[in-house]
Image 1 (cartoon, helix red, strand yellow):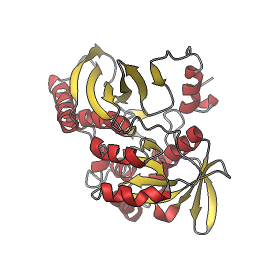
Image 2 (image 1 turned 135 degrees about the vertical axis):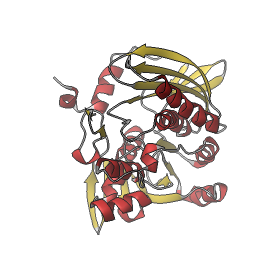
Image 3 (image 1 turned 60 degrees about the horizontal axis):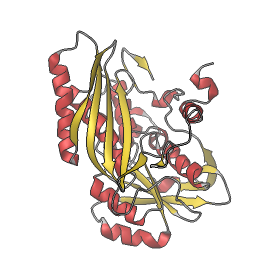
Image 4 (image 1 turned 120 degrees about the vertical axis):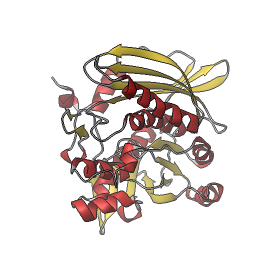
Length: 337
């Protein structure tokens, strides 16, 4: 039986989680959020890990080594920020083919170091092994912010669903790269940027639940629904489409809403909050674009979207083991994820 046969990545995670013994008393939250929350000496620490694999998450055909390193740091930082925390310390493990040029590794690390400096992260160790392809893995430890660690499970019926910035830009950039159209519209895919921690903490002051957009807007809202025991109704016309997604519509014939809902790797924040808190949040973070895109719903389960007067069910999203053809992430010569 293959992983795809049991339902893909989420089913695999559930299977593995079921094999674990109960978490010890110092673990506030384990599997099921953007980060684990561990209490040590009274402090709440946030722990997350992410891995980039050549041919699945990046390709040296279009990524520079420095962009790979920066992307590795940014996607981990985004997990910490999505729980209202501050990133602090990182360990980096690398798997390198034996014929890897030293300059490549040096430049990957330069991208890591530059991104780490931007977010105040200290790289404190790691591991180096050889293998058949490039694999870069990072574990990041952070501190819970002043408003605590925001989970996925606090949303309540009637809460508004909001997203920062715009979405669909990374998936659009990948589509341009795969079509051989160059890097003009690919910046958000090649070099994503996490929302800065201070802004995430301001959102945490008002939010009831939060998650980052790594696997597509539809998947992230569904995670909030499942964790909180609610449904959600999105308004298609309220979704803030990235300029790159609109360019992909005009130049490649892509559906920009499909890129936003299913593409992923935008690393924006999706969060819920009561309607009456939204104006105060916008005043607190005037330089951060915040779009109200729908509401949590107690009467229905799952994620639905209102489009052209019709309400439709949504699935979508990126899965490492069950990948829709329109969001495949691959290099020209390395196969798909």
